[in-house]
Picture (cartoon, rainbow, N blue to C red):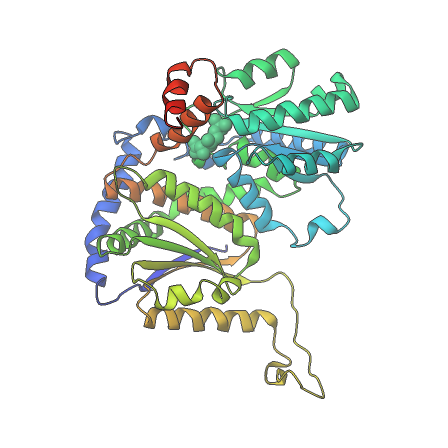
Length: 441
Ligand code: PA5
């Protein structure tokens, strides 16, 4: 069985030693025990901990059935959601998809995303694209009240009903939301939509292995059983890897490395990094503490951020996502004229060049004082991604406890919403509206 591997032997610098990382491992192991006992901070949000091994056949089969209907009867399926109700599905679908899937013929519905921004042109362009085509909607919101997805859903629901009639629309809208509470639950019940539940004890950023992620991934045509199986494997036998990662990143943080850059050398991992940024940023960035999670796509960003990483302020470390096998082989051809001077690599695979870029970059950055953590995925498939997702989730819980924060709340994300509601004169925000208007006088 293919297993992901975590290594940190290139993390040691003048300021971070192996001993410092070893010293934090008992704390990370203790954090794992706290998670298991369920008596730490945020313990009402630990439903993700044994989620992979507790997903039953009936739930998988139901998700697959809904996915089949949407996939077969729609040209497009629009997945509406933001933050934890968006990034996991987007990350997995992008990681598994043909890089140019959007431009190639497809045997099932194409997945589109909405409700993850408030771009007016974005929504206009999207509605323009699906106008006159059969489309379905997966609307995902745990609270059922988030503004961005609510706006997108209101627009797209009205459009779908007008285009296909209320009955067809209701059969092709699936809602993923809280079991009982919230505006979306109420609306779904009234309209008779198929619904899936986001468990109360699973926070948004830990929800990719619930229907929040599984349904869109299944609609995209990927094997959610293999994804879950990979996560189960990590849940049941990956503890030491996660302890090592949680300990290493905290040791680095304590030594002044305040920024962790998640690095990939495969463009399909761009959104995996976006998901990871939310997971770690929202979990750890509080109480004036927390590693700042950043991400780069190499080699692309070596031509932009490479300079900063090599030579800028030494407050960073890198965690590299290295992919073992590509699915396809492309060999660099020989050229008689050799005007571009590339004949020295003729006959070699593009991936070999990429791997040398990866190795060369690591050596250069480590020499430049950037500690390196390395996660190797044997290949980019559902099983390896399932492992990686659970690895990051549990290591995040442990790491937050080692840092001394509650990794499962996100009080900071409310601040902008309050201001926005006050500025828009939302009922119930009269006092805040008056206060905020006064600032502009
Ligand atoms: O992680 C989180 O809790 C957030 O990112 C939420 O997922 C995001 O704000 C969307 O919330 P909801 O699913 O309630 O619409």
